[in-house]
Length: 106
Length: 199
Image (cartoon, rainbow over all chains, first blue to last red; front, side, top):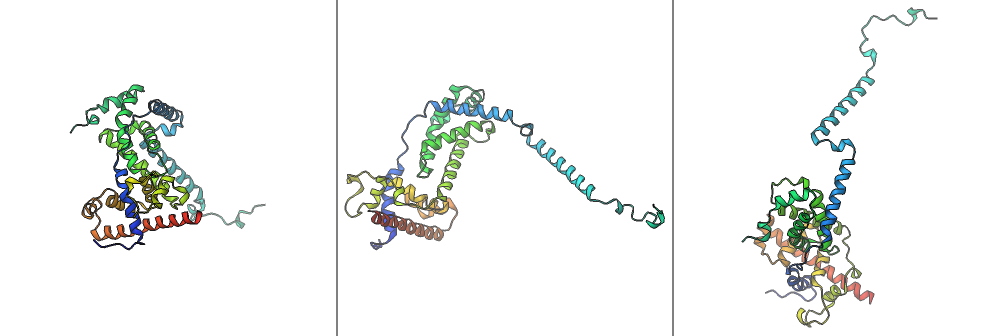
């Protein structure tokens, strides 16, 4: 095997890894889960359910219904925007309207 | 070979947990605790205890229990949640990847300062925590480098086995391993220099 120079940093790592290998291979201590785990996780679960029930009706809707509602609102908003920016003149351009002077306004 | 987890009726137990049965929750945790601890112990970053990850995983499992649809065995689902939790903790640890001498415990410092020529690890009087030091060093690496060096130097896999597992070419594995070993060795040397400067 090729001998590594004494100051080669790789040598340091390989020594540490060799020492750590048996320690890392050991399984964790076989301790049972603490008894309060079950009580705590069930309490968390109940709290999450209560939060979901008390949340806005929006979150109570299923995903598809939420998507449909959102796209309808978006389409309506687009329509309002388009209609508000279109000038009435564009539609009456060719109409035979009298000139302003002809109206003889006071 | 049939393990105790295989014989356990998970679907019945899950149904009882969904109906808020505390004894069912306790037996579900008892069944899964060794699995979760094994994964957390192997994949956790140095700064987080395996017990803390286990607690976080069980909280997630029970909160998302209604999302489990039974497509995969329940322990696989839990194992995936545990692995993702460890990965998330490792990502956060990697953000603070500068390792200092003062971050190490006395047992970890003892591994660094030990003279490799003087004694074998077994007959050292001062307790050493080489595994803890390795975890600290691995936390300084990006995920891919960590994977390669863990498989090669800590799990003792061959280059060809690593190629099969990762889909990488042999030269890429060898070059990455060489670079990472140098990087880790240099970190160890830098830490020792910090110790000399402090003392």
